[in-house]
Length: 347
Length: 254
Image 1 (cartoon, rainbow over the protein chains, first blue to last red):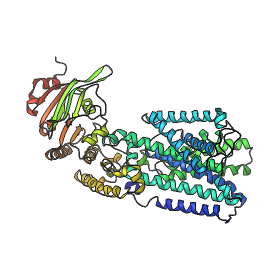
Image 2: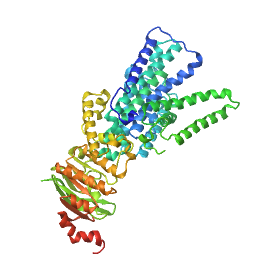
Image 3: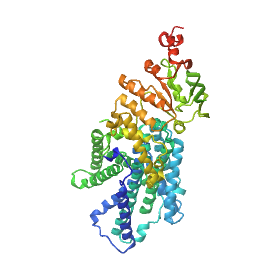
Image 4: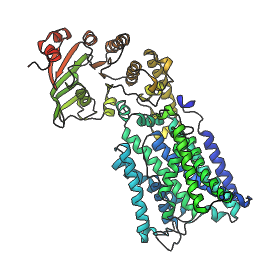
C-alpha cells in the first residue's frame, strides 16, 4: 500500500475537489431559489450527518496529534468548546445570558480559531515535554477546568443556559427547512473534506515522516537533527485550531452554545471513532467515527421493535456498542483499517 | 587542533558519580576507540558529549565552539551524530523511511512547503531518495527496503542505524557498541565500513567491548575506569599496560 512509499502525490486532492464541489453545491442551495425536498424520515439522518462532519474535523485533528505524533490528548473537547464559545460570544446579537458582542460572524469564526489555537499553545508550552500519560492527564484536567468555568461564570458565559442569539448564516439565507438542512450538510461536509485534504497533504509530505518518527522514538528523531518539541507543539496547535474551527462552525449552525454540548462525551466519541477506524489513517478515522455514530443512531430505532422498556433498552444499547468495541480491540487492535506494523501493535 | 574535546566532564546520578573529571580530545580525521569495564562511564561520556544528558560540570567543544549541554538536534546540525548501544530503530517505519528521515535541509519538513507541495520540497525529496537508496544498497539492506524495521535482525538493525546516521553526512560519528551482538562476518563488514568512512575523512569514536576488532581498527585507544581516564595511546601499547590488564582481569585487586 502507499503507506510504504509516501511520495507527495495526488492523494488527498480528490478530497479537496470533492470538498470544493460540496461547498459550491451547498452555496447554490443557499444563494439561489433552488430547493431540496427531504422526506421527513430522513431528517434525523441528515442531522446526525451534520454532527458527524463537525466531529470529523475533531477526529482529523486528534489523529494528527495522536495517530501521527503520538500525543495523547484526552481533552480534545476543550478546543472545540473554546472555539464555539469565542465565536458565539463575539457574533451573538443579543443573548439574555452571557456576553453578546454582535460582531460580524466571519470575524467571530476567525477569533474562535485563534482562541483555540492559543489555548493549544499554552497547553503545549507547559506540558508538551511531559511523557504521554502525563500529557493525557493535563489535557483531561484542562477540559474539566474549562467546562467548570463555562458553567460557573454565568455573567460571561451564560452558565448552563449558555450563549443564545448566535447568527446562523445558512439559516439566514434559506427559509425552507429541507433546503437549509441539505445546504448545511453540504457546506460543513465540504469543510471537512477540505480539512481531510489538508491533513493528508501534511502527513504525506516529509513533514508527516518526522511526526511518525516522533511517535516511534523521540530521542532517535532528535539525534538525526529534528527539533521534536517544535513538531509536537505544531501538531498539537494545528489539532487545537481545527477543533476551534469545528467549534465555531458548530456555534454558527446551532445558533447557541451551552456546556451540555461540550461534555467529555465528545472527546470519548472521537477517540472511539479514531481507534475503531485505525489511527494514523485519515480516511479510516472518519470511517470509524461514522461507524460509532451510526451505531448509536441505528440502535435508537431498535426500541420500537424490541419488547422491552426504554430503560432496559438504553442499557442494552450501551452493552452492544461496548461489545462491538471489545471485539474490535480483541481481533483488530490497530483498528479496522489500521496497519498493525505502522502502529506497532502486536497481533 | 582537536575537533571534539571534552574538558573536565562530571556527571552524577544520585550518589553515583558516573564520570569524574574526564577530559578527552579527538583530532580531525582520527579513529578513536573508547573501552573500559562495565560501569566505567563510556556510555555516560557519549551521552554527555552528544547532548542526550547535560553534564554537571565541564565543557564540550566541537570545532572550537562550546556546545556543552546543546541538545542532540542542534549537535546533529553541527555535524555530530551518534548511534545507540541498544539499537534504536523507528520500528513503525520502513527501512527506507528510517534512512530518509535523517536527511537534512528538507523544506518539506516545514508546514507551508508541505501543504503547497513546493517545487523545492520535491526536488530535495528526489535527491533524498537517491541518497537513501544508495546507502541502503551500500549496507546491503536493499532487499529489506520496504520492510518495517521491527522485522529486522539485530545485525541488520546495526547496519540500518549506520545508514541512517550517514544520511546526515556527519563530521564526527559516535558509535556506541556497533559490534555488540553481531556475528563475526557482519562485525568484519561493519569494521570495513567504519574504516572506509574514516579513510574518507570522517572522525569516528567507537565504544566497544570487542577488544580484538577494536584494536585492529582504531588509531588510538582511550581506556576509562570508574569515570576517569585510565590510559590512552596506541592500541598495542595500551593493551600491554598493566593498569589496563588489571582493570579488565584483576577487577578488585588493588
